[in-house]
Amino acid sequence: MEGIITAWGRILRGYTPSLSIEITRECPLRCPGCYAYGDDHLGGDVTLRQVTDYKGQELVDRVLAIVDEEKPIHVSIVGGEPLVRYRELQQLLPKLAARGIYSQLVTSAVRPIPAEFASIPRLQIVVSIDGLQPEHDLRRTPATYDRILKHIVGHQITVHCTVTRQQVQREGYLEEFLRFWSANQHTRQIWVSLFTPQIGEIAEEILLPADRERVIAALMTLRHRYHKLQMPEGLIKKYARPPQSPEECVFAQTTSCISADLERRITPCQFGGTPDCSQCGCIASAGLAAVASHRLPGGLRVGAIFEGSLKVGRMVRGRREPLAINQPSPAA
Ligand code: SF4
Ligand code: SF4
Image (tube, rainbow, N blue to C red; front, side, top):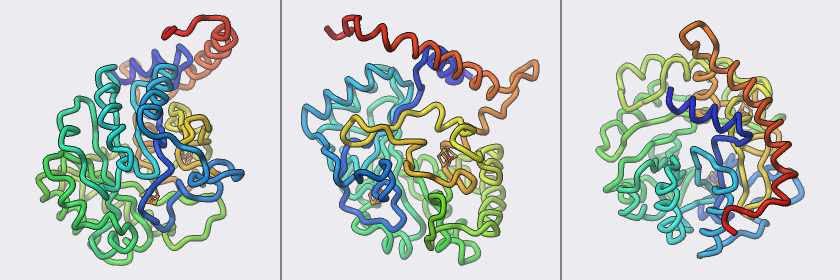
C-alpha cells in the first residue's frame, strides 16, 4: 500500500515511478529470441549493437543525472549484459541505494556477481535462467548452469525464467525447474514470465494458446507447493488476459525505458518495436495489472486512481518542461 501511494504521488507530479536503463550495448550471449537485439527494438533505424554507449565515470555520472531528472522509485538495470560494466555498477548501485531507490539488476550471471552487491540495501539481483540445464545451456551459453551456480554463491537471487514453447513440450518440466531452483540456498524467490513475441513474429519460442493455458494452470497449482515461486494468484490470472495495447498496460504507462546511448527512449515498453500485447507474458506487466485490479476499502479500483493520476501528471509535466528551460538545474 505504501508503494502504491508513493507511486501515485510521483505520477501526479508528472514523473514515471519506474525507470529501466540499458547500461550497455554489449553482451557475450546470443540468445535466440532476444528482444534487445531485435532489428526493431529501437524503432528500426538503429539496433542496440550499433548505438554509442558509455563506460567508466562518464557512465556513472550520466546514469545518475538521468535518475535525478526522472526521480524514479524503482530502477531496473538491464542490457545487453549489465555485468560487463561491473566496475561502474560497484559505484552506481550504492549511490542509487543511498538515494532511497529500489534497484533491480537483471543479469545472465555470465560473470561473477561482485560479493559486495549482497549487502547493498534495496537491491534485487535477478538472474535469467530459461529452463533446465540442457535447454538453458543451449540457449544461453556462455552463461551456463555451471557458471551461474558458481557466480550466485553469497547472494540471494531472484530466478527469472521466461517460458518458451521448447519448455512446455514435456509434462512436469516446470515443476522440475521449480524443484531444482527452490532447493538452491542462494535462491530467494522464483518468477516465471512467458515469451512475448512481436506482432507478426514467427519463432519457435512462441507459446500456442493451449501451451499458455497449460502453463497458467501449472503455475496455479505449483505456487502452493513451491513457496519460492512468489507469484500471487491474481498475477498468474493476468497471463490469461493480457492488456490489448500499451495504452492498457499499467507497466508501460508507468515505466520509462532508456537505451544504452542514454538518450533513446524504448517504446512502448522494455521490449521495444511493436510487441504483441495480446500475447504478453511479462511478469512486470501482469504484476502491475493485478495491483491495478485491486479494490481499496470503499470499492475504488487502484487502476482507476492510476489512470486519472496519469492524466493529471501529463498536464503537470507539460507545464513543468517549458519552465525548466529557464530554471537553474538543482545541480548548478
Ligand atoms: S543475455 Fe539478454 S541481452 Fe544478452 S543476448 Fe541474451 S536475452 Fe539478449
Ligand atoms: S509489457 Fe506487455 S502488455 Fe505492456 S506494452 Fe509491453 S508487450 Fe504490451
